[in-house]
Image (tube, rainbow, N blue to C red):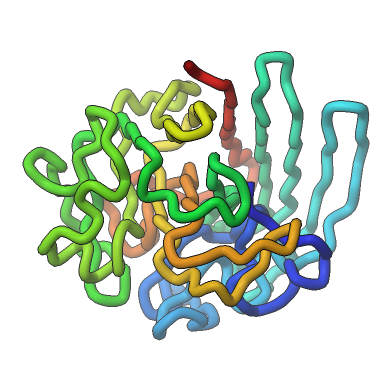
Length: 298
């Protein structure tokens, strides 16, 4: 995983901010930083080309969490987001558990409760290069995603509302393919994202945890599998790295030098009633599981 060597860099407003944290209250983008819930319109900070991204200017990634418990292989922590924080309604109590398991996996579990109706979409924004920090681009990594469709975006990366089949497009990873094979194809969606920066509509969504994607580096033999109970996954191909960031060990992270695979509900879901709902009401509990499982393959 690509990350930072100090907490100070994680709190910066620059590129390093999203190198590994929990993001929310709403991961990904909300159009023009606004949504309507029960007849009331809420306005959020517009921190990304006029849109609200990853919870706003000071989202969950930029907050100090309280550690509830820890052991040799796990840590549990929580944060209470006050009513109105970054424009979101309701006091939201979020608990996250990180656990290292016996099958070489990092398991991330999320729970959240609210005292007023609100919207919630949490995710993890770790950036990966299976070749190691500063080892070059991820274009030679092989990616598989169990998805027959994506949610196409406009020029500011907001979903249009369509569900578009991946067949015959550069977005078809139902058979494992090198990330670099089609990333520079003449395709409007790739131009909008400056590469891949899109949400895939995952198959077999029932609310149960299942294998949804894998990333493999032929050079090192390292493989990562992603399991989740979520309906979507955002694949971001590191299109905005520019050698301006250093990793934990001082090596530069260059253009397309890492990828994010963020399990989630769909971007801008509060403004698209046809998407799976992100509404959370008092008395309900938001839960999510994301697992990154690692191995070395011949």
